Image (cartoon, rainbow, N blue to C red; front, side, top):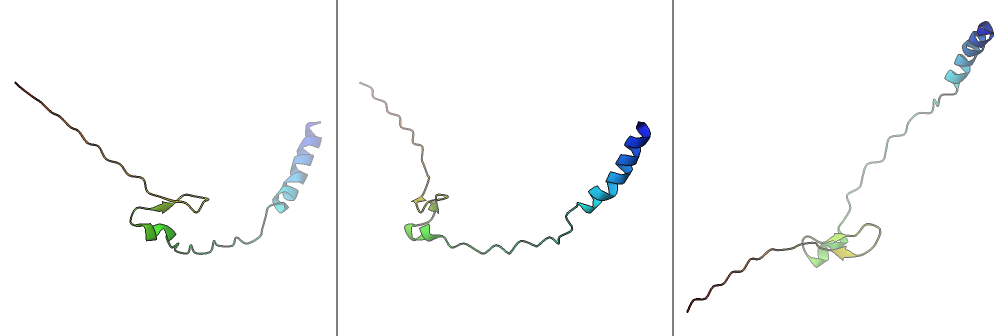
Length: 70
């Protein structure tokens, strides 16, 4: 039984090696520079992926304090 299994494995190895993909790999095309259509709105605006909406995310923090005495 082990002899038959060994013969089967040895016979299957060349078949498995021939099944490998031998096609040449194509290089990716160079990335082209994208223009920012949101630049017309001002600095910091970016386009939301998958839409034509331009947004700018920003924020600020302010702290106020006051006091009064009589």
